[in-house]
Length: 361
Ligand code: ZN
Ligand code: ZN
Figure: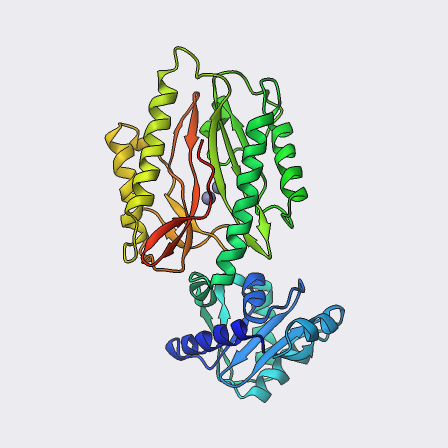
């Protein structure tokens, strides 16, 4: 068994005890990879105190043997009653956890109907966030992948700042960024590139359009690369030429958002909650009179997916601890005018934040 996989499984088994279940059925794609190293796009894991089983269909059997050497490999046959029931019966599980957030209703119904038909006593117990809570604390190797993905996004941003010009459409800018990241080692995009100019920048998740970028307006660029399965997430707001002469707003908004972000990055430390972290930045924005215009939360964890635990936002109770990787991304959005968002990726190390992204313009 690959060493990091066995330590993850050990932690998972402690969780099984806490949740009072004697096995767990893993159906989430990233969770399956995290616990087995298996990259196939179909299959499930069944993990009990003693057994580690990977079930997949015939297309992936060889790949599974190679990538998940510590697992017993089983082949999925036509219906769940054919493979699921005999398997769980043989394992002797009585309370099997299922990932409530990662299983479709149809899959759940199939499993429970198969159990009923066989008059099995096995109980399916919905659990949430079990593997996600392990994924929240990154190993050094995972942070290394995220840092490499962040480095590619940094370079893409430097590149686009050189070549962006008045008259380019948002779509053209987005495509240049996408090409650059793919040609510079990003295995795919962490998410679709966001380029939002002028009034479009007032929409936090705008889709690049045919709109041509004009002089003196805010342009929000939000990008993420992917390396070794791990994502990055970076936002900068740029302005071609100087802001419109009458637009004193731009500098006021920009300076407020930047100050909010720097204050949060400097003051977040081990032990603060997602809510407390959020309020560090929110206070700066409130004091500047833009409180109503910061409509989203301060940040989110990043790893195998671009949005994961911990959550940094109002009422978020996750406690930030060393080994976590998350974004700090305050923003101010004014309908009809535009918006400013500045987003960096940090990790908590020895109790303090360390930046994983580096461009600051
Ligand atoms: Zn982002
Ligand atoms: Zn983000």
